[in-house]
Picture 1 (cartoon, helix red, strand yellow):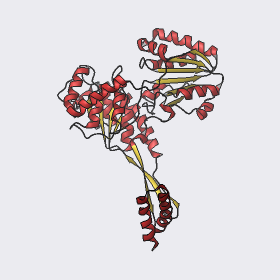
Picture 2: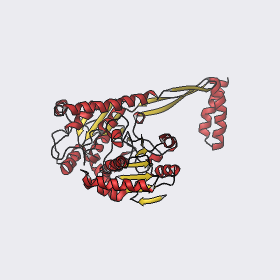
Picture 3: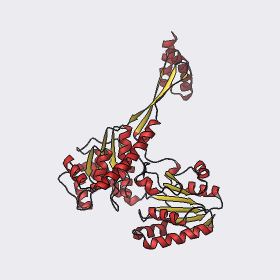
Picture 4: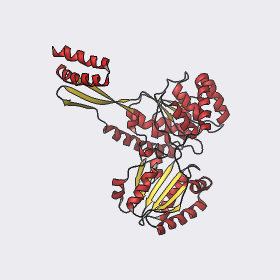
Length: 422
């Protein structure tokens, strides 16, 4: 391997100052409810409405402000997300099997009852994120989805976001952002029933709030700054590769990028093309910092080393611009979502193609995938047996309990062997 450019490391690290700040905010929000929500909303977003929840009339007014093309495009994107979620759900079947005579085991999938969905704003109004948490939840059978999204500072809601949340199936919509939004959904505060699971991305304060609220309710992921990795051999187009790297670099100054090439000549050609595009990029102010601080460019000795480098990076998004895509697809293990061939790109997955864009970051793709319909289902097991089977299992269980010295456990087995043995 040859290193052309080395960048920062993106491991999840606990920030003690952020941890303490969020803990104090959550304590305040837990004790003071909507008064604290109002205080922080005024402080951070200059937003202090009579009610943070939008009425049906306000939702209708917001949708009416949207251009018809925007509404149609949003419907297109959401149809794809819904169709894929429905196809995923169809693969999740209940199970009941008799593993030996008289012993029946099984599982069933039960939807979570209430989900809190956060649709981020901040640097960009990411209204497309609405469909990524709300639609899979609704397809899974979640009864109530409470949606929160931050206001445009001092102005109120972003109409495209409200349209997306409503069309995706949000049952209630609140205009409140950041830590207070997650506190509202988790605690209820007399406005809603407390949710059973929190879902959605955000800044470091949002991520820390989810981490601290985990246990009181479930969470989807702890997503940090976005990432992209690209493996490119000499059959790739340097223009497209550079374009896709910068497409993710614009997200955030802390975004991560990894490019693994199979030859130094291609790597340097792509680097030159990247700098050329960066000169005229509309969002250069962010992308330039991100690439300078966090961009990595390696030349692998062969395909297998390229795969090892990518798996070690464990990116949120992975594109493969290579001639033999099957070779890589069969061997790559660690990624949030895989984009195969130059015809697709991360932006398709983020916005419109139908897969989910709430994905693992900071190398957590080593042990988890992203949000999908199954995230909103509890897979629970059951067991039943005949008296004859209970005798057989009970005898073994009683002996196991005796070895473990868990005598009361053993009694529950022994009384059954005696009862059914008669």
